[in-house]
Amino acid sequence: MGLHPHSASCRAREILDRVGDKWSLQVIALLGERTKRFTELKREIDGISQRMLTVTLRGLERDGIVSRTVYPVMPPHVDYSLTPMGATLMEAANTLVSWAETHISEIDAARADYDLRAAEIEALKKIS
Amino acid sequence: MGLHPHSASCRAREILDRVGDKWSLQVIALLGERTKRFTELKREIDGISQRMLTVTLRGLERDGIVSRTVYPVMPPHVDYSLTPMGATLMEAANTLVSWAETHISEIDAARADYDLRAAEIEALKKIS
DNA sequence: CCGAATCCACGGCGATACTG
DNA sequence: CAGTATCGCCGTGGATTCGG
Image 1 (tube, rainbow over the protein chains, first blue to last red):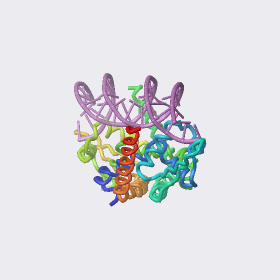
Image 2 (cartoon, rainbow over the protein chains, first blue to last red):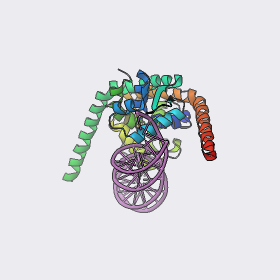
Image 3 (cartoon, protein in one colour):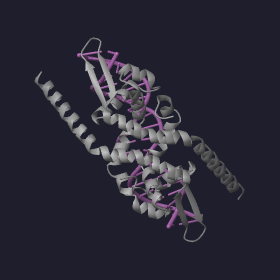
Image 4 (cartoon, protein in one colour):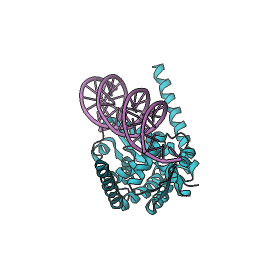
């Protein structure tokens, strides 16, 4: 178990790809608050298209992370919520999100430093 | 802190994209064992191209996750290793990888179930 | 209100060839 | 050994339109 090389590559990658796409994490985060409707999610996720919200929700539903409840009324009413497994995924993802948040400034600094050095080296090339 | 909607989207996504690409996690996992050379990494990561290993390492180096040491000799000798920050990232990523491993079977089952139901519904359509 | 279908732009990534 | 340069494919995802 863990991040030893072969386990990281084999099947785990497949799952990580699923969750690591552009929108899944945000959807999971919002459904972690409570059950929500399609339009509500669309309103809260800035920049997502109707198509991508549908596609993302379908993928999560297929994987058993999100559950979908249809009320056959007019106009249509559909509720989305996290399954128990989805809730555990949210907690696991939290670890990485928290890591990212606490290290953003350090990463920004590293990038600035790296870019600065790259520019310096570029300048030296011009002289020669 | 955590997976509340706005933090998940803002800057954290940027970091998650960086680490969530096709090869970064594997590189980090392997460097977690010990310092390694370019060719050694290339040999151990199945299917990676020379170009992508370079690109991935550059990205991780720029973010301060991997450190690169060049020994100016012939033939060239370059060592790669995790920085302290890189080591903490590896542990955080471990959480998600472990989650994926322990839930793979449950996800597979969910998918099979979903696909079965989809096929049934498709069959009903043909009748009508 | 919720979603399916189609079309298309963009960027990630692989293959290949070349260099100090 | 450790890269860099160039090209082209293809999958992700955005815009738009239509349907129940």
